[in-house]
Length: 219
Length: 219
Image (spheres, helix red, strand yellow):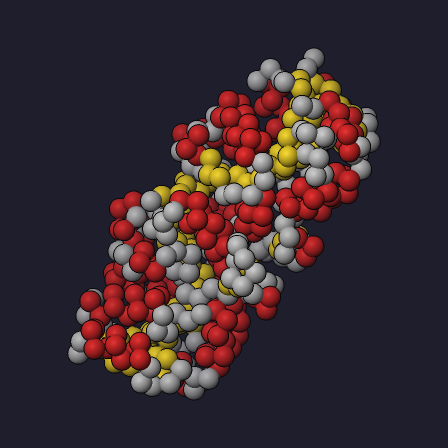
């Protein structure tokens, strides 16, 4: 499958690398083509890897992952040609966190009422935005088995049921999530909640001393 | 032990009833003495139960539980005579939620930066405020075994380590929590995080169809 990954940070690199290892054809997108981190990744990742602008990566992908710093996500998305995202599924992994005011991090002011996930969907109404994977460490995103044999939960939301289903299957097929591990919280408005728990996740990380943990819903 | 429970709603009644069953001497406090719900509870709860004002209940208690609607908590606390709370441990179970804007609920505007837990501690600096139990359903608060045999987590914070330890022991001794189930997130500032996850809890409740669930941290 042709996949566009927007972002060259640790999350983008983890997602892109995992997808290459599963046989996908992945383009990593950044603000400008020739980004040093993207070039270095491409070199390591081999023949199915490429790099370009955000716009190039969106055009390339049948499926897009947004792996950007929450603060710059909307700006990046708005800069992509609308037709390159038309009818595509966009998995939004971003978090609008502000670490500048000390711990715990805060949600950036612009996203305290309407979440970043909702604002991404509003910015690209021609795409199907699915918020997912944003509540865990990037190493765990791409291999659920790294914690408790994969027996734990992530929380998915989005307006289009078919797009959510496709993303669920993709996560099961590529990142070792179990179907029962994927909890559907409804439409994209639920991103308010899945973004709002990330400062809590950070505090639990501090308390445990490792980011390799997750939450499991128990009844 | 003499315990004051501020609040006559479902949370206050659950806590007060469970503590009576453990042999404690419990006074339920409300805005004015003779509250119908408090009188009705007292009648059912028997000879170790009493009712009075918030101030009466604070005076009565060696340990105080705040089980009020988040919106009215500060007002109630500020109305209590300062000396009735001096050097006492106050367990704050409240959540500053606004359900008037539809789902998911929002955090009330006054508590989006500085949490209700912090503001309660600031309002009563002569007391040791411990934020606990606010992330679960009231039936589960008082008997951890009601979900997954008690094998799940709650998150505790507060400025005084000794007060937190006493609350942990109290929860283990009275409400069947296991020591490993109690995750300490540090000082009262962490209440920002444990309050912020409650809208998420509400969405998971909707998704599961039952409030009798909890989160378990898995590594």
